[in-house]
Every structure is written in C-alpha cells, then in structure tokens.
Length: 231
Ligand SMILES: Cc1cc2nc3c(=O)[nH]c(=O)nc-3n(C[C@H](O)[C@H](O)[C@H](O)COP(=O)(O)O)c2cc1C
Image (cartoon, rainbow, N blue to C red; front, top):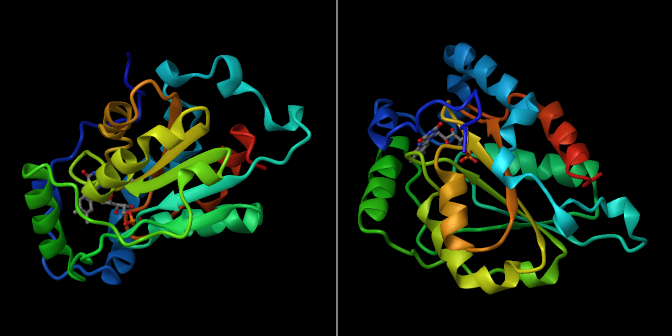
C-alpha cells in the first residue's frame, strides 16, 4: 500500500517530550508557533488523500446512506486529551444533531501536564497495557455507523483505544466504521495498522485532522462528513 503523500514519518514520542510546561490548556495557546505545521495539517485534512486507497469502499461499505429510507444511528466514540478531538465531535454534532457523542476515558485520568502525560503514554505503550476505562452509557452495537475519534500518540493509537477496540471488537462487525486521527504533523501515523490489528476483517476508513493547539480547520469536518455520507 502506498502511504498518502501528506503522511510524514510517524513521530516518536520523544519528539513530543520537548515542551516542558505545556499543559492541556496551554497546548491550545501554542498554536501560533506552529503555523507551518498547521498549514501542512490543514492541507491534509482537506485532502481526499487522507482516506487510504486500501480502505476504499466496496459492497455494502460504500452504500450511500441516502439509498436507505432508515436514518442511520451514528455513534461517535472519542478519546481526547487536549480537546481537539472533542472539537471535531462537537462540530459533527452541530452539523448533524442526530449524532451521539460518547467520550472514552481512562479510569485513572492522565496527568494535566504535557510532559508527564507523554511519559505515562510511553510507559503504557512499552508495557502494551490495556488500561481500564470509565464505564460508558452506550456501546458500538447501539449504532449503524461507528466513528472513533482519537489523537495520534507516538505514531499509534493511545492505549485506551486498544482497550476499547479489543473489548468491543465483535460489535463492529456489519457496521460502517470510520476513525479520525488528531495529529500534530504525523498524519494518521500507524493508527490504521493498529485499527486493523484490533478489528481483524472489519473494513474502515481513516481521516487525519491537524489538531496541535486546537482544531485549525473546522470546515474540513463538514467536508469529510459529506464525503462519508454523514450529512
Ligand atoms: C502523549 C502525546 C503523544 C503525541 N504523539 C504525537 C505523534 O506521534 N504524532 C503527532 O502528529 N502528534 C502527536 N501528539 C500531538 C497530538 O496528537 C495532537 O496535538 C492532537 O491534536 C491531540 O488531540 P486531542 O487534542 O484530541 O488530545 C502527541 C501528543 C501527546 C500528548
């Protein structure tokens, strides 16, 4: 499979430990310093290339929702640390109020500060942990379309997504599955590969939105939703 052109090499976690003092809140304030990366990410988010060719739809996966009279139940399950993935989920809900947004949260919250969070993420990843999650009121089986929102951490899915996808893997069968990756330059990284390993045999499509310091291109969310028939 050819990687999409925008995709940079996955960024190692160590590349994201150079910001002492950064917190969930100040992550948003750092935006101005990163305009070059933002432009890159914005272009990526706007580009159809963010959907990988290998996951191009065929058969029922590609059937437009408009073709059926029943309105699909759309569930967005979002893990977000700094909030940009939550902004995407809110925008989805604003554009399509029928969307149900549910937050994926680790039972033991991550630290507030950036560097301790990267250290915790690195530790969890090295130990291949499946951290316990807070209970959720709904699950993928309650929806026709399941959208997973997550940041890219060290080029991969954050470990809470490993727990979520493993626990609910069987519920994804027969459903339309999408994921959106929030990133600070690496695009999807290896998150498609992680999804594929956790949901074997389940077709899905991924899109990347630039989110370092907050979601930059809100319009890209609506464009993507239209492309995927979610509007
Ligand atoms: C622990 C950690 C690791 C990260 N690793 C990456 C990475 O590998 N590649 C990347 O592009 N961005 C990386 N970032 C930046 C975030 O993916 C990016 O800011 C994203 O928009 C955050 O999503 P959120 O606001 O929903 O938490 C990392 C951030 C953190 C906190």
